[in-house]
Image (cartoon, rainbow, N blue to C red; front, side, top):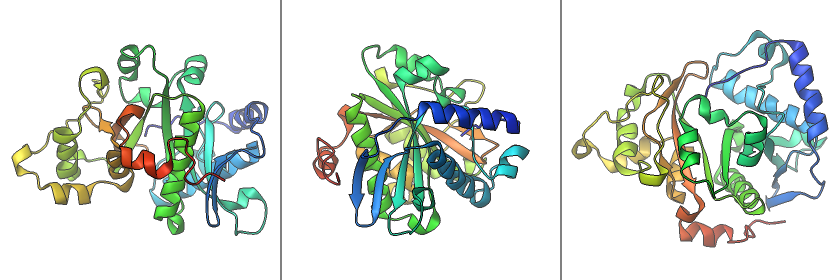
Length: 293
């Protein structure tokens, strides 16, 4: 995940002021609940700020991402897309206090119509998204990004709620396909030769859905011949997020990209709604009603 952090306090303040103007989410906009966990969109600039703090804890303090001095000063992961995206949250409602203190996970959602008005998709800094979009002029795309959950909440329930939120949001906005970066830890693709090669040989996006890393950033995923790959070991080596998308029916683009700032190796996940496995549609509900409030 490349990051374009705002470089000065003034810019950060401008971005947050912009958020205060753009966020107008109804206070009843809950997308799902499981026990004490709830998923919904951010309702205020202060909730987005809290989500940025969660992102900082995960990406910088835990994963050791390199960020600009202002980000370290404010302990927030902030970039220019935050003001135009919707921010999906998971909250632990058993925590007493303001909602900002309850946020334990977040996802950033960017619809194509919004991206076209505001400077494009974040993933386009790494992958040739425009060629994919051009092949599907009648479809609505949505980008998923900045997914993170606090360590103590990395459970099946939290993952299910994040997907519940994504699915409900996609249905609400008539989305036909989702995409976004999936990351492996570390900036050396060869350290993930088994998993990357498995993705390349088995779930590569082809034909109308083919998409590749930008040529100047492209790192091969074809690091092992297919006959040398142990599928069971390869699946075990996949990050949980990428494995989860695969179960849903996702494909991956051709080529990985090294993000030196975040110290990750990124692949592009592509998930047409029509590809989503029937078992998952049944589980979450064709109307996203499985965990609806």
